Each structure stands twice: as C-alpha cells, then as structure tokens.
Image (cartoon, rainbow, N blue to C red; front, side, top):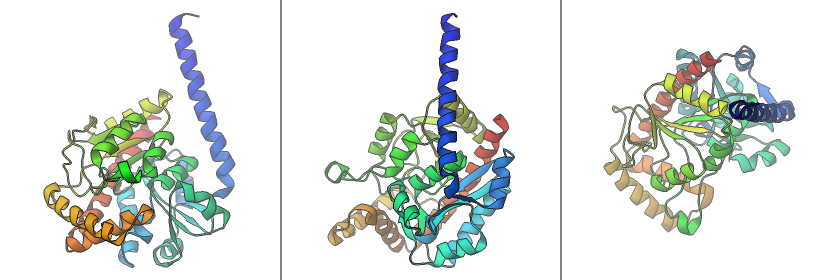
Length: 332
C-alpha cells in the first residue's frame, strides 16, 4: 500500500469511527426523543430539516406574539424547501418538532425554564419543561440527526470576561457538535473580537454569508473582518460536507447579516448597550440572568425597535438555513 492509499484508508477509518459514534449516541438517546410526524418522515426520507430553538418563544417575547413568531418562522422554513423542527424539553422528553398544543404550552407555561446543555440531565431526569438555548438545541438536533439549525444570535465571550470568566456554552458546543448554526452573528452585547478568537482556537469555522465583515446581530457591521466568507447557501452546504467528510468534528457558525431594512447601526446600538450594561452592573446581575436582562433593557431603550430587528433577523436566518439544508441534502 502506497502513502496515498494509506492516508485514504486512515481517513476512511476516521470517518467510519465518527459515524459509528454518532449512531451510537443517537441510538442511546432514542428512547428520550419524541419526533413530530412531519419531522420523522423527512428525516427517514433524507429530506432537509432545520432545527429551531425554543428559548426565544418562552423567554424572548410576550404571548401571543411568541406563538405567532414561532409559527411564522416555521412557515418560512417550509417556504424555502425544508421541514422545521422546533426543539424543546417537555415533561423530560426531548421534543423534535412541536404540535400546536405543545407550542402553546411552551409559550404560556411560567414553569418553563431556560436550559443549556448542562441543564439537560436535570430537566430530563426530573421530567421538567425546558426551553432550549443554542447549545442545548444543537445537542438535541445532533442526536436527532439534524445538521442545520437557525437561531437569532449566538452566545460568546461576555464583555469583562477577563474578570468574570463568563463565556457562553454555545462556543463549547460549536467545538464538539456536528451542526451548522445559522445566526446573525454573535449578540452585540458580547465581546465580538474575543468570541472570534475563541472560535478560532476551538477550530470552529466562523463564516459570513455574502459579506466580508462579521455581523453584530442588530447591525450588519461589527468592525471585525470575517475570518471566512461564502457567497451562497450552495457554497455553505459544500463547506459543511467537506468539513465532515474530512473527519473534522464540531460545528460551523454561519453568520447571516441582518437585512439592511431592519438593522440598527452599530454606533447607535453601542450607546444603548453601554447604558444597559451600566444598569445591569448597578443591579448586580451575573451569570445566566445577564443576557435576558440586557436584551430586555435594550428593547426599552430602543423603544421596541430592537425587538422588531430581532424578529426580522430570525426570519431571515430561517430562510437562509432552509436553503443551506436543502443544498446539503442534494449533496447526499
């Protein structure tokens, strides 16, 4: 066997081991997963599916706007060629796709907790309700065999993390879970530069769709050049296939800049963020309470504009994710 053949054999073995590991994990967790029939059929037939998080429903906006938003986003996924799978934990069951009644429960029950990956064992073991963050949605999506996930913004390194060590679990999940996260970049309230550095260290491709500058959630520009760029969903899909075919475990962050018509310029947003951070410090908030407080305070400071932008970018990301998922499915 020559050197080239030996290298190919090693690559094939690595890919086989990775696939077997994923299958074993999925099989082990299968008894905890409840698939909505439409999602189950699509996965069985190899059709494109897009995962959607649930924190934005239970903790992101009031009822009934949250239900209207969720249904609208699911329809956008369908309109762009994929099947939506909104993910949550209800009664300790991992829900991959929600019925109308389950969506209403998620949107109205005050006992629904915001849960990240670390919280999953408790939520499942104690049969509780949980709305999934980016990290926990990624983990459940991977267990279900879903490769593409649409959200609003991704977590990252918080400002002042040198003292607080406040770094989102989203970054660690991106480093180890084979899912592409389509978002409008990382949230503007974070330290975007340090977040990009951590993603690089973890080997996570941070790719911007159709732009050379990495976006900043509410704003199309962050001041940081994008590490990598693709121009179309088809190019993004080819990158995903190449990454996982190479045996490179972990996810991809595909940053999709907010539409120009909906963005709030970065300079204006920074004024609001600075004030919100000051208000948060005065209240002494830390940990998982910081992001919900900051996003809510920014809604107040912008007179509701930031919420409108948030809804617009989620819808925009859902369309892009569905297109990427459809292209990825075509690659076989």
